[in-house]
Length: 338
Image (tube, rainbow, N blue to C red; front, side):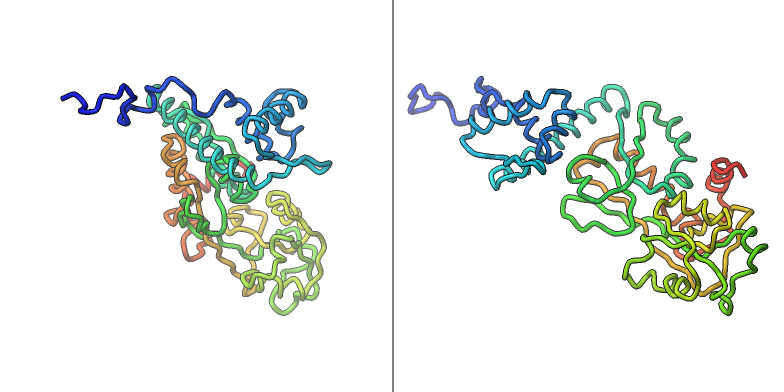
């Protein structure tokens, strides 16, 4: 039936795709440049990221601001700061950027199986001992997925699309993120046999005579580290180190008593110490909920859960110093040439 009032005007039921005009104007490229500057907080760093000159990036920012009739960024010697209007536009563009990233990843996955780069943020210690030995199995099952391991920073990296998945020690409660409890990471005092040969076995009664390797990671006022702090206060701090792998090597080199993950007892040259200091911290795997719609990201998410969940005997709720897991134990032995 014809419309009773045929005025010749376009139907309100007409699809937006049928309208030939671009409502956003002609500055899609400028929007991409603006988002890069907003994330980098620097025109120079954004230009390097985009592979254009600083002059070109600056010109596109000016063109965008002129088109919108509003100042979006304030530049100074220390970098670029967003105005209120700039913050509003950044939030919108970040969501759009994330949706495009997810959509393109999914399209590639549908056309060519699961394919793409998945960025995983994890500490060196967990990455070297638990993730790296198992990457071969993932590569066999999904040959087109490439893992990019990144040093963990903070959850802002997830929100700004600088990483896809993050292994951490706290649950993220943000409404846009999925944070799943995995296994438990156990710490205990460990000393090398070479240290014991030189200075004797550290016990609860003679800590004043012994040296400790401390770390800023253990020096916060959070109560969970209190048992370790009490031990360190009784002895002498010989060295400090914040890099996990370097810290472990300092302990194994006999430089002092250190606080290490329980899996390090697989190293024949060290001894666990009974000093009334056992620290258990839960592990969490966090991702932007929207990113989990991407098939490669979901595959790697499930892969990490399988490695770092409570089924891993080294990460069970109760600490086990004689865990029998060939995948982990053999991987540890391979990585450290045992």
